Picture 1 (cartoon, rainbow, N blue to C red):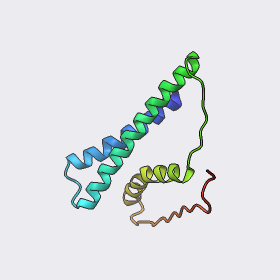
Picture 2: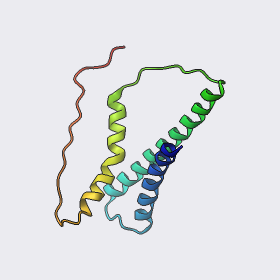
Picture 3: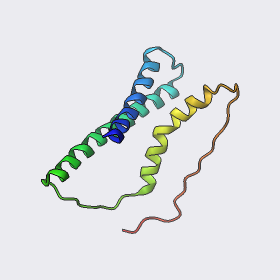
Picture 4: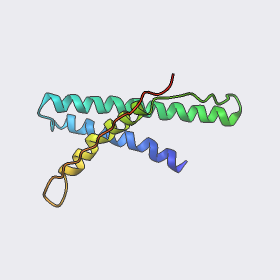
Length: 116
């Protein structure tokens, strides 16, 4: 239950911080505003997915549902994860107590298409 609590708090904290920035008129340009809204939308979907996963787990434990594994595209999953953390990383870098900004580069490539 501790892991579930943490997993639910993370998107909630993200949504809250981005909404507060918007409400405080801290966003000056449209591109950043759009990115913040996209992040809020993504985190809301992520939160809904976590809640749905909890319901599915409850059904599995109760024996009212059986597990049906399926294939997924890891590239899409990784891109979604990266998008959700990119803005948080940027904010932490800008708030660095050392007084300088560091640049991070991350490259994600898919060498071949999944079968099927």
